[in-house]
Length: 368
Image (cartoon, rainbow, N blue to C red; front, side, top):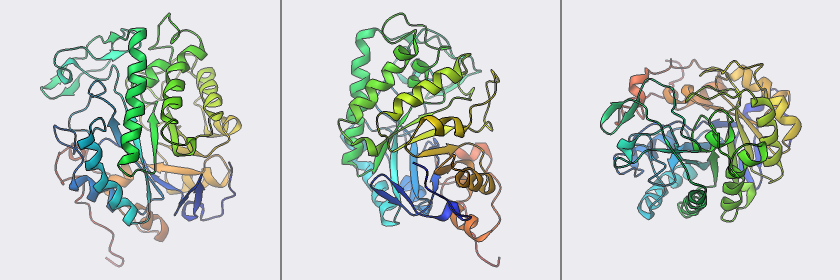
């Protein structure tokens, strides 16, 4: 779906299925770790999302679909009724500002640690250790561990966890859900040959490696119409020790299969700002445009100018902004009026667990 953009493309309304977005700017999903040890959304989170509701679409931080999915301290969940009820204050705050919000469904896979799971190992498609320095756990920094490979008969339960999380998201008032299948987390680990060495029906061929995501999409679309469901892919990234030699063939296939579903959008992390596997030429949005007919969201490292260009050239329908939105809650107005941006916040402030570095950034005062 390529809607003709004008010279102010970012600020033009966009029809996302049956949802009318006030502009083509999206808030990128970013883990901000303010949900506390019980992983329950709260008023501080509602304020954070409300502050950024000038964006046409907000995509929440990754949200755990189950206890097994946990792998980040103080990130939110959606696997209990209490968590779902608490998310309502966020969705109501966003809707009161005229924006739309999708919940991102997340399972960390091997990017977790036994400290999150009562001593039980994190799970993955194959027992391949993530090559990184350490992981933050409830007990402090820990060395990464070799994950436990999932048994074939365990996988349907995880698929159902996604379905139940999607059901709770609907009850919590979200406008849709985004399936996090990027950045080296569980679904991406199934998709990529580097991390999937299985010999059952979930490994080997492109069709088999796609099967897990396919089953999740089918389960979630039993709860939501496909036009309210989306997926995120990261074909170029090396985050969480990813990058497969057959990436171009693989992600072309995955996108072509997702195109058959009629999703709300495909969210592609096409930028290289946060790491590139350097296994060949990076995949660009125009490659996905050729094989994916529904809307496409580009993400990672975009400026206002490059975002405008991507939309004007027809390669993207929306652009998601991450770091600039942290320190500029009024990013949309700053773009629209040509106001200067506040510099990116220090990384240490991102995860203070308090309002500092979260909701305390100032809005621009014209003339100041």
